Picture 1 (cartoon, rainbow, N blue to C red):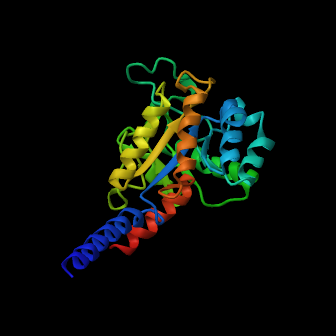
Picture 2 (cartoon, one colour):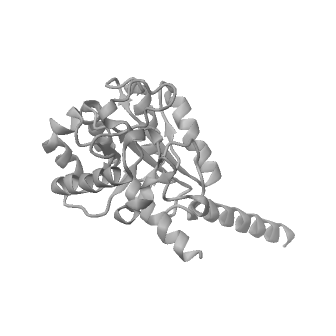
Length: 265
């Protein structure tokens, strides 16, 4: 009888632990979001075909004036039709040029010289532009260059009602209760191996956290780049572990976080 009781106790502890591990993120251990910035041609040529082949969905942060967007409107619409998220990265991708290392910033799109209204107008008009492609009203935002302020003003707050959430650039993974939907952390990828990318996912699994990847070039196309074979190691790992990992567009995860945070208040 003692052996039976001990076995029952062990089974109870095991099943309870597994339930806790799998309960936090849509029944999974963690959530992983794949985001790709700047409407690059390689996203259409290299990334989307791989994601489609695996049944995975990504989030693509688009700026209206980039050639990779302007020259591929039909292809971006097709990506949306297949379930990928088209998301807001402003019309002209303004970055603050008044700091060291930002000599490359176009003076016409220097965020440090913007008014808050100009930035708000860009964000709102990008939503209109994207709506003509995918017909969606709900949208997420990503801060160009990770810059969140104009002077002392958090400019996202002026347009927050137009968005579900915003993705930032702080390298962090957090559980649902600690996520700030106005500035969700992400890991900017530049030159890492597939094994290093997978290790980040395993950390998210172990901690029950949200992990957002921020890609630019994938197999080329940008100075911030990851080799295509290394990127593909990551997405294959995700595909193989969908029983434990929720892989979804940023907007879906943001809605989920919002609902859970409201229910826990």
